Length: 177
Image (tube, rainbow, N blue to C red):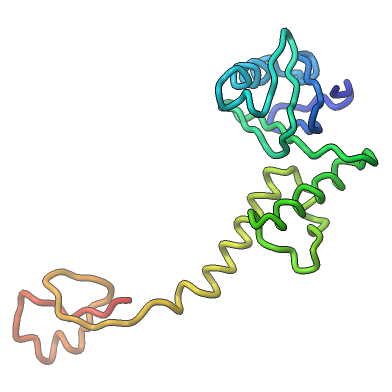
């Protein structure tokens, strides 16, 4: 059950644990509750949420649910020791990295700055970090430079060759990767 002091303004994620029950008044946003309730009644949503009269129960799934209106529900794993939300986020991020769904964190634990973020923002940051390192490391090294005379421009025009020995006016000397 969400405590009354956890009512969140629109745009901020609401954080719950597995098996928690969400009441309509707990969210402070009736539209978000109705969207979650409707999704829980769908075929896909039944595997994650259980809808009841005026309540929604989170089943045994952890992750992020975002509705069409932009409402974000974070579902963190339930732990035996009742760890705080930041520790639970670290546990979830570690589980995802060990499963291969996220990049590995070198030492095995999630960085504190990422675990302190809302889960959806942390996942986006991890994805962008992995994307930047991939682009910096490997994409440019797999390209092979080529030079050809083509009927249309592709890449860069080799103007020195074009001015010197352009016998065929219909073909353009190009350099491309």
